[in-house]
Image (tube, rainbow, N blue to C red; front, side):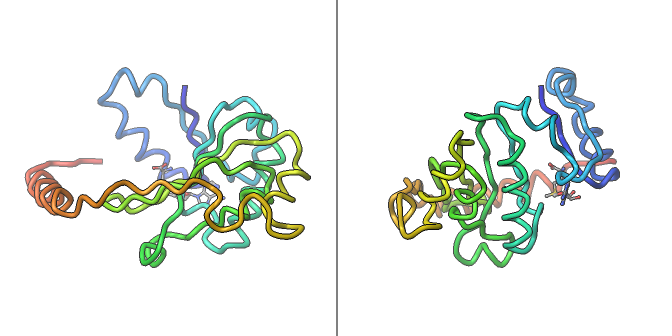
Length: 180
Ligand SMILES: C[S@@+](CC[C@H](N)C(=O)[O-])C[C@H]1O[C@@H](n2cnc3c(N)ncnc32)[C@H](O)[C@@H]1O
């Protein structure tokens, strides 16, 4: 089951319409209009929480959202944070893995795609010992998360394939009829 939270009811309405056509996935999706800052107890029931890139545009807001998730998610649950890398930061906020550590998570991996996917993802796990993760994230000096210690996964360059794929998608979108 997937619970989708968005503070914008129009976004939820559109998203739920997109899933109407797929009875299998659609039946497992539910949409809730709420600000993530107002969620508390319900966060503890999820094995995985995906944090959208645009929730918390400024670094401080993003850190606050992550700390809120860290305060309410279950120990051992996974957090997948959409981020960006390099010039892609012009399009989406770049999340500092240390803010994730300070929020009570252990950062397990950072993945920077180098194809037509814009967002990086950071995979983290809620730790029982919030204080320890804070130390590891460098709050009390450079610890486990000093540059280069978290595995950074970047697939080999697929620029040629990417161009072909973009052209194919452009043609598909030109032919598609999308109605909301
Ligand atoms: C890239 S869109 C994602 C839209 C859609 N919910 C989805 O998952 O495809 C980012 C969404 O984050 C929502 N958002 C931003 N800040 C939020 C917050 N504090 N709590 C809940 N939703 C928020 C915005 O309303 C916006 O629709």
